[in-house]
Image (cartoon, rainbow, N blue to C red):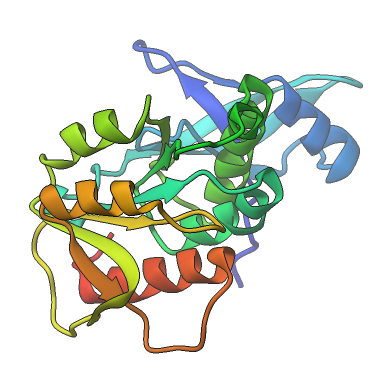
Length: 239
């Protein structure tokens, strides 16, 4: 029976040398208490995954020997699922980032909305969410870490959105999500807790966003985000 291999975040240099991100040693030595000779996996989040054995270990660091490595191809363009999100309260994002990684969302774009308190998107919070993405990617054994971006504003977001052939806006007055495989990259937008302002909704419409609704009761923002990601991922190609 194959033993479960814990996966850690590392860096792979151009000459093929691997190093572990420093805080991972704390996890290996203090939390999991792994021993010399134990096997681990190391991923750089850019497709490279190595299987390795732990070498000599000290109290705070150690060494490891790579046995083999694989380059997992980047997900094909037509399978890309991007979610645009009116920036929720920080706790809201904490609640669903791991789920989005598990569901195979490739990119998460946070969209400032009218009257938003800018403290919802501080550097400290972005760093926290980036760490959550890394942690969830290791857990889900995702070789490519999803991207986290913050749009400068709605207009800048909509300008960039024209690059996506399939654009959806989650809206209670929309059509229900059609079954059948989509073979193009998808961008789906979900509002924050209070929804979008009328002027913002008009801008989405002008940019050709198709309104979609979920056949459910009224959902909290966090539930709506995960439900949308799951339904769209099932209707698309493999991630």
